Structure formats: structure tokens, C-alpha cells
Length: 448
Image 1 (cartoon, rainbow, N blue to C red):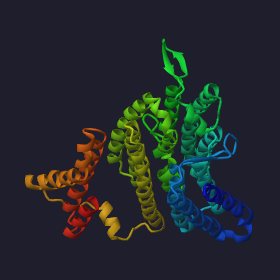
Image 2 (image 1 turned 90 degrees about the vertical axis):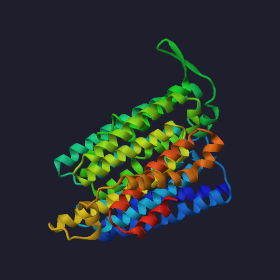
Image 3 (image 1 turned 135 degrees about the vertical axis):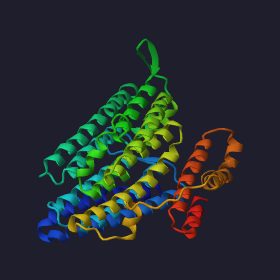
């Protein structure tokens, strides 16, 4: 059964490559209908990745390697199949959205070729088992992203801001390359599975008057690389400058590319058992980034900049979760954030596209809900108690009290806090927006 799973995973990986080659060889003949090739392969990729996901969990297959200790090594884990399906699904939505959004842009075929290559790179990060090849895909992500962001290269500002992104991504390559060198120098392997199996070996180096394990140094370098790629403080400045690029690429970037830092940290998750210092770094940087990104988001009057800084804050939360040891929560957060942030960017792109073609945007319910000031009434102390404290805390307590009793005051308290904060925001905001009790009780049911 392992072989069948590998075949499907390799097929999902090759689908974007075949799509890019098909577009490149046919764009002169098909013209604007070239999107049919790229979209067709996107559908195929979703189907294949779903089958591999189903087979992996239906047969209760554990992590396994294929072509181990070779340049073409594959290391298939639950994270690999989940990420492949998630990315292919987001990719399909962005392909469909781009058909009309990019229709009147120059370089229509070039856009779809680069989009397919970006999906190929993300798939590569998810499945390769050779650390050198992993670093190569890590580097290629920044290069392909640069060409996507400067799609409209005739604008000087677009090229300038695209270079900021490229420079930051190249900067994130350096710590990972140092980590690869240390892995090969001390563990004599470039195979990811082999390395994670022998990482407990207590190699030590002398640094600043003290002995430190090699595993800790490698973990710190990998975490620094992840933080830079995921717009962590103080490398968060590049993300808002990417907004000159096509809006569908902003959606893909905030759904999958910026999340690459959280992904690679999870790819090396067993390493951090022996390099807890890296988790401390992630915890501190994540805490600062979450507060800074959220605060900057509230200060923006441009919708895309507000969404960009919101992503910075969300990346901070993910690093905070990784730093506290909640790796599975970080992956869940990454997927949820990718879906809702891609939806927000595509929605804002629809408004921007309409404004470009029609100066007076027609008043629609979605537009009114997002942009018009709602008439809030001054809440009473009783309403504060009910909708901000009692209801959300009761729901959170009912869900997590068994876990808290079982694990004492462990990391489950983080879930309790997030449930209360998120619940109070949703319930209180929707209650005072005057949208009716029906919507209020629907959201309460969702919270439950």
C-alpha cells in the first residue's frame, strides 16, 4: 500500500510541472484559452492529493521513506499528505479566480506558468526527504515569488518592492544552509529521516566559553530561517510591500507561502526535543510579532495593508504555538488561517477590480458590512457581563475543563484563553452589529 501512496504523491507533485510545460508549449496556439490547461491540472492535483490523503489515513500508514539516502529521496509523513491536499485545494480556488481577474493583464500565460511552478515548489517542500533538495526548494520559493510579484514589471515601484521580498527570502536561506552544513558535518547524512533518527547523539561544540549541543545550534538556525520567511519580528517589513503584485498571488502567499516557516519547523519537529533553546526563540519572537502585527493592522486605512499586517500577527501566533510545543495546533492554525486569509484577499480583490472598472462602487451588502460605520449603542454593564464574560467563558469551560482537570495547568490553558478571547469578540461584535438574534445564535452554535 505504501507504493500506491507514493505513486499518488509523486503524481500530485508532477501535475503542476506538467501543467507549466503544457502552458509553455501551447500558449501561442490557444491564446487566452491557455487557462484551461492550468485549471484542468489543478483539478487533477486536488483529486490525486485527496486519494493519497485517504489511502494514508484509511490504511493507518505511518511515516515512511522512498528512494532513501538518494538525491530523489521522499519522506512521506501525515504532515506531507495533509499539506499536499490543502495546498492543492487553495491552488484550485486561486486558479479559478485568476481566469477573469488576470484576463486583461499582459503576460497571461506567463502568470499561469509561474503559478504552477509555485505550487510545485510548495509540494516539493512537503514531500522531499533529502535536506539539500529541501533547501533548494526553500530557495526557489523566494525566486518564483519574486517573479510573480513583479508580474507587472513595467511599474518601477513593483520591481522595487519585489526586490525587498527577494532579498528577505534570500536572507532566510542563509541560516538553513548553515543548518544543512552542520547536519552533514556532524551526522554524515543528508537524509531527513536518518538525521531525525540520530539527532539524539550528543555532539557538542564550544561557543562563547560554554559547551552547547549541535542539535541546539541546528534547531536555532532552522527556527531563525523559519521566522524570517514567515515575516517574524524584526523581518516583518517585507510583507506589506508585496501588495503591488497581482491580488491572487497575495491570496496564495498569505495562504501558503508565508506559512512555510511554520511548516518547516513542523517538518523538523523531533529536532526541537533536543534543541529547546530554539523553542524559546520562537516563543519570544512569536509573542512580539503577534502583538506588533495586530497593532499595526488596526492602524491601516488600506484594506490590503490591513490584511497583510493581520497575517504578520497570525504568523506571530503560530510561532507562539510552536514555541509552547503545540506543533499540531500550529499546523491546524496554519490551514485555517490560509483558508480565511485567502478568502479575504480574493474578496478584497473583487472590490478593487470593480473599483478599477467602475469609479462608483455599487452599494452591496458585503461592501456595506465591511466599510460602513455601524451604529453601535452604548453597552450596559449587564451586557458586558453576559456577552463578554459569562457566555464565552462558560462555553470555553465546558469544552476544556475535562482537559484541564486531567492535565492540571498544562498547555490546555492556552486553548481555554483562546476560546474565551475569540468567543467574546465574535459574540459581542455580532450582537451589537444589529444583525439579528438568528445570526447571533448561529455564531454561538459555531463557537460550541
